[in-house]
Structures are given as C-alpha cells and as structure tokens.
Length: 428
Ligand code: CMX
Image (cartoon, rainbow, N blue to C red; front, side):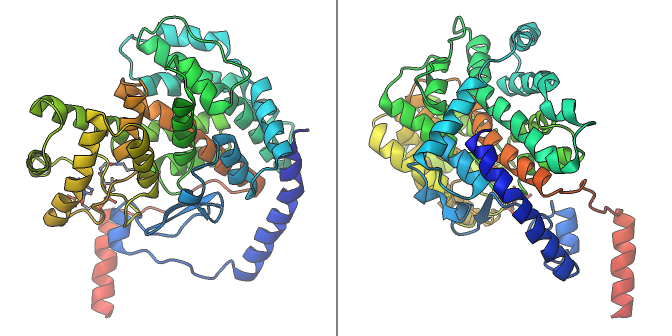
C-alpha cells in the first residue's frame, strides 16, 4: 500500500467521526443566509458547502491547508498534492513514495491517441484534453468496483483513479500540444524527472533548471482554489452523483474552459499580443489606458483583472510577477504585462463597476509561458487543467471519504420570488 494511502487510511475514520459529532451537535445551527440578490447572482457569498483542502480569503487569497500560497512557492507540485490531501508536508520518504507511485502509473492508453487523431485538426486543446479524459473513463477503478464495494471504500477507489489520472495527465496534455500544433512525434516520459520537469520535457520545450522551475511554480500556484469556483463546484456536483473521477474531472475542466474562469489566461495573453501588434511594440501607459476604456465601453471585460472572491491583488499573480521580473523582464510580452498591471486597476477603479480592480492569476502567467517557448496561448488552459486536477481530485477523494451526499440545492421561480417579497412587504 502506498504511504499516501496508509496516511489517509489512518485519518479517514477520525475525520468521519469528527463530522458525525459536529452534525449531531450542530446540524441545525445557521451559518449563512441567502437574499434575493444572491439567488439571482451566482450564489455569491452564500456559505453552502465544505472544502477542507483550501480556502480563498478576500485579502490573502489562496490558503492551502492553513498556509498562504506565498509561503508555498518553493514547493513542488507533488508536495502540494500531499499537502492538499493530508494537511501535512510530506517527509522525504513520503514524497519519494508518492513520486514512484505516479511514475509506475504513467502510460496513456493507445486508444486515447486514436480518438484524438480522429478529432478535427482545429479542435480547441481544451476540447481535446477533456475528451481524452472522458475517453479514459473505461479505466476507472471506481466505476469497475462500484457494485461490489461498500460506501466506506469509495475514497480508496477514487484515490486509485486520481493517482492514475494525475500520473497520465502531463503525458496526455503534452501529447495534445504536440498533436494540435504539429510539433512532431510525442516525446516519451523521462523517468529521472519530477512531475513538472517531465511535463516540460514531453512538451518539447527548451529544458533548463529555470524552465523546470517555472513549470513547478505554475503547477503549484494553480492547484486549488477552494470549493465554490466553477470547476471545483462542477466536479463536486458531478462526483456527488457517484459518477467516477474521470466523469467528474472532465466536467469540472469543461467549466475551466470558460473565458470568465480558466480560459482568461488565454484571453489575457491574446490581449497582450494585440496591444504589442497594434502599437508596434510595448505600448505606453496612455495607449493601454485608451484600449482598456475601449474594452469597457464596448461591454467587454479586461481579462486577468477582477475576481469573484478576492478583494486584493491575487498572491498567485504576485508570485508569477516576481518570477517574471527575475527571469524575463527584458521581453516585450512581460513589459506589456507590466504596463497593463500599472494601468488596468486604475481604469477599473475609475469605472467603478468591478468590485476588485486588481490582477488575478491569469494576468501574469502567460508572459512566463511565452518566455519559455510556449507561444500557443490557446493551449494555456490545458496547463491550468493539469495543475487544477490536483485540487479537484483531492476534494473529490475527501468528499467520498466523508460520505458527501448527492448535491441538490433548491431552486424557485422568478414568480415565486415576486410573491415572496410581496407577502414579506405586506407582512412588514
Ligand atoms: N473588466 C471589466 N468589467 C469587470 C471586470 C473586468 N476585469 N471584472 C468585473 N467586472 C464587472 C462585471 O462584469 C460586472 O459587470 P455587470 O454588473 O455589468 O455584470 C461588475 O464588474 C461587477 O462584477 P464583480 O462582482 O466585481 O465580479 P464577478 O464576481 O461578477 O465576476 C469575474 C468575477 C472574474 C468573472 C470578473 O471579474 C471578470 O470577468 N474578470 C475578467 C475575466 C477573468 O480574468 N477571469 C479569471 C478569474 C480567475 C479564474 O477564475 O480563473
């Protein structure tokens, strides 16, 4: 048994007992209220679900198991996966064991490549990735064992699926890249490399300690963002029907493919490139300001800025920006990202609509990827997905461990709300 499974096996019964006791004593205690604005407004701020892997504070941003993300930027993704699942940093032995678990599960089935080859050559890379994950559903241990296992074993089957999926995702995602952008044959994994470095290797990008570190940082920073964002919420909902992790993750990542969510990093670099093209190089602050107003006046968003929860600069942006300043501050792309950073928040503040005018994670990540040779920005959400799969799967395993039931919030009609507020007004 892997050390990760051993650790979780020791934890899960206590976690179940703790939740059972909490529900018995406080099941009826109110923790949130919902108003009409929230019911029509994407349930913003409604505290209606549990996520133990991470929280997002409006001021501090992402906090993984109690640790602010800026304290974790030197961690590699495998360490983050361990932390997400167990709440602890792995020992050297535990980390080595997790790495070898992932290594031995590598190997994307041949039929997946056949399906991808049959897709239209101009398919979006996210469509290719998510289709491929769905096609691999036949590998699901959870689905295969569903009729014979007891509820208490669900998390173990989910863990099997999670480790298999995570082991294969870099190879799959790199294969999507090479196929979609005609980069030649797929590149086989290198057994001597860690999860992130191996991904750089299989993508066929120039390899150096710097490019490895950029990818380690990228995969660490995007790993999780509590439970209510579109991809996590979707994965949770689909998983709650006991659809297996392949169905649930593919569904969640389809949400990540939306321009208001993960696709914003593609949009963001596209915007930066348009600025460079339009102004023949790095634009001035005045030029960027003019274009930002054009976007807002045309009813468009400034990609990479604003957030549903954050009310400060996203610390993940802060970390990327610091890395970029150190390693790629000479390039036009990074310089343009900087001008945008110094301009867009002021424009958004002046317009006064966005509750958070500051950059989010997507505002800076593309400049780094571009610098290290990944210039096809329609691919960027696939990178985001490889990382975010760690959070989605960690949440899903924990949810199966604690026996989270099927999701079923109540909806009502607009007519119902009109009647409700009318009778509340006449009663008051
Ligand atoms: N540019 C222009 N307008 C913006 C804006 C931006 N970057 N951010 C918010 N607004 C607008 C909203 O569209 C909304 O306008 P309406 O009232 O006309 O609908 C108004 O400001 C209030 O929005 P909000 O409460 O501040 O933000 P929401 O919680 O509704 O939306 C988000 C959050 C991220 C969708 C929004 O800020 C946005 O569209 N940003 C640009 C896209 C982006 O960068 N997305 C990536 C987010 C990170 C991620 O999930 O990956």
